[in-house]
Image 1: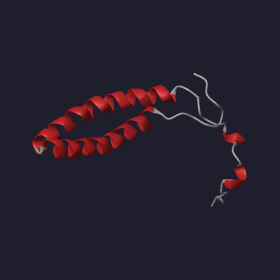
Image 2 (image 1 turned 60 degrees about the vertical axis):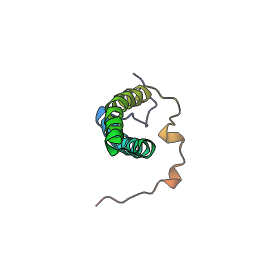
Image 3 (image 1 turned 90 degrees about the horizontal axis):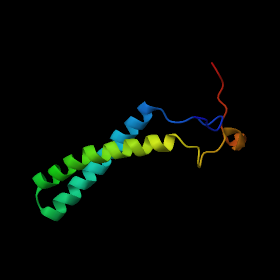
Length: 90
């Protein structure tokens, strides 16, 4: 797989952490909405618990698919480097 020099692609661990953190937020949202609609915290938790795993799996596949393509990425050399702060080495 080729990619634009200087950009890199996310690795599996990064995709997995992004998957878990995003699904945590999404699941809390689903539980709250389900509770507001049904009036039952148990039903909200059941719906949220189910979608937690299905959507986590789908998001991970989606994230890995996007990591395989260069569309929308820019080469680091084309970015204005004067805006990047330079730090001194100790």
